[in-house]
Length: 479
Image (cartoon, rainbow, N blue to C red; front, side, top):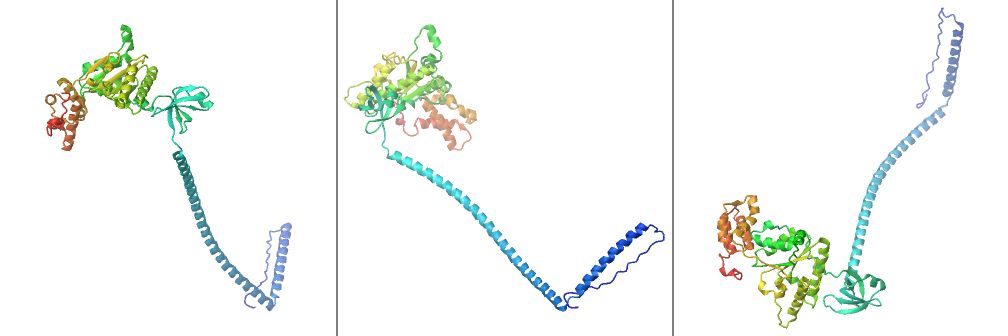
């Protein structure tokens, strides 16, 4: 036989049938016989197929072997191609993964670019808006004095007080009221309505937050504090007591005395304790350049005070350094002094003029009462003139204890003789005693001390009195 295909070795099967003498059932024998016949037929069929296979020629066997070898080579080629295809698939899979990552990065970059683009667009719009605002001409503020027929308004421009007549639209004419503020352009046409005629400088004079100072923080001045509270606070907090006795409460209180004696401190305590709105201003704020502007500011101040008085059942107006606007009227021929006098006359009219000023309590403070105009000091305007003197020994003791209260609470005081401090501060004011306590603490900090001792207070007194430098530096005007 040739190599490649080997003929099988066929041996005939001998079937041995043993029948036991006990098997006398003919149906079982018949069934076994049929099974043997079937098996015999199958063996004959296999023998025929084997004979057919043995009958193949040598050429056919060689062609079969050739086909088998060719099939094996094709299978090898297919296996190689499969391996190469698998490698390419792996490479493509890696490339696909890399492309997916690049796609994610590009999406993230695209989103960031969109965000940057939106931000730049918003910035561009903001810049354009600001540019348009810079290009736009400014508007001037004017006050409506009178409404004339045919949609005309009689205006007065704020600042230079120029008066003119301009025409407006019917809608604007119906909306605007006499006394309102309007914005006009350079052609003097009304652009918009700003609001009422109360000056914004007056609105900021109202205290939004109450001061923390109370009457307990004021050393001495017991009688003076009682007089101030009777004239300013009690008419607002206890009006029934005045109605019971038919007494008209004082309209104004003037506090005068040397600098640093506690005049403004009393006003802060009143603002904290009164329970009504508190308007504070300096007298110099009423002095302005243009004619009538200071008087207009005074009118606006009292107009706002009247409105607040109606809403809150009272208001307190405090004018500090009133001598800057209420000095004696003279005739020196200058326009500046004339404007100050016009402002003073408006203040006098508002304090006690023809119109009722309402439940407005006025407080004022000055350290130069000798400069004030006599019309300002008369009863009806300032019913009580209260002198705030330099503190005596008892008051100085109280002032020292007030300003060293936090030091004592912190446990930083050591061997401080208050009686010695009081005797060494004869003639000093409350503000100077406060400066002494502050300087004593600063000296202890400078020396890296654990406590503030009596020597620190002695050095502080010497420093505040300027004894270590020049005795002439002390202001002796009020001593």
